[in-house]
Each structure stands twice: as structure tokens, then as C-alpha cells.
Image (tube, helix red, strand yellow):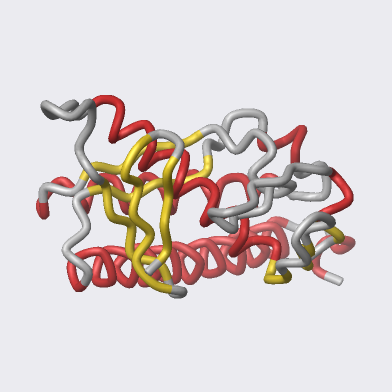
Length: 179
């Protein structure tokens, strides 16, 4: 193999392969960030919420540095591109979002709700892909945060979050509906 050869030529060949892979990966991340922003524009979104990446190394011990780099790079790409559209991009702490039921009439949190890529609430039986469930919970957390920070005369402004399953509306910090 080239790595075992140890020659300068082999080393340079390995570097070229690595650079090509990094370039392809960067292009893929740009395409993903463009798709995220296109969907945000299509749904008239003013905010995009990402899972906070702090301590990702501890939360995803299997993830290589490239995975961690990719999460950060995607967030950075979306953030700088969103400025042009006036869209705010924020990171939201993910505490228990993968263990909490995202059904608005339940919200039960238990570590056994999630089993790998599957989520099934032990209380209400709601079953969905675990990452989608966590994403909905992150959206709700951010919407509640926005609602608290944008006060109106009745104590807070309603916040709508477009989701694949419908429009999620946060009417107060304790009332969330999906329509």
C-alpha cells in the first residue's frame, strides 16, 4: 500500500487523495446548507435552530474528528449564508431532546424512550425516527425561547415552526400545538 511504501511520492499521493476527499465533502456540505436555506426561504422562516455542538466529542464517542468537523462546518456555512436573507441561526442545548416525547400533549422524558435510531414513548406510544423526534424538541425549545424574548401585551408573541408533520405553534411557554 502507499502508506507502507514510505516514499515522498507515496506521501504526496496520499495527501492528494485526502485533499480531493475534503473538497468533495466541503461541496456536499455547501449543497446541504443551500438546501436548508432554500427550505427556510420557502417556508418564510426567520430562524434556524441547530443542536448545540459543545461537547459533541463526549456525546458521540464513535464520531471521528471528520464527523465533528462536518457538524461545525455545516453550521458555519448555514450561518454565514443566512445573514444575506436576514435569517437568524442559533445553537440550542440538546439536553434530553432525544429522550423526550415531542408530542405536544405528552412530553414524557425517559432514557428508554430511545433505542438507537428509533423513538417510542413509553407513556403515550408515539413512535417516530429518533432524530426527527429530537429535532422537533429542539425546534420547540427554540420557539419557546423566542416567545419569551419577544414579549407582546399578552405576555409573549406566538411563534410558528414549519415541520414535516405540519406547523408547530408555540402560543405560550407551556402551550404548543401542531396543525
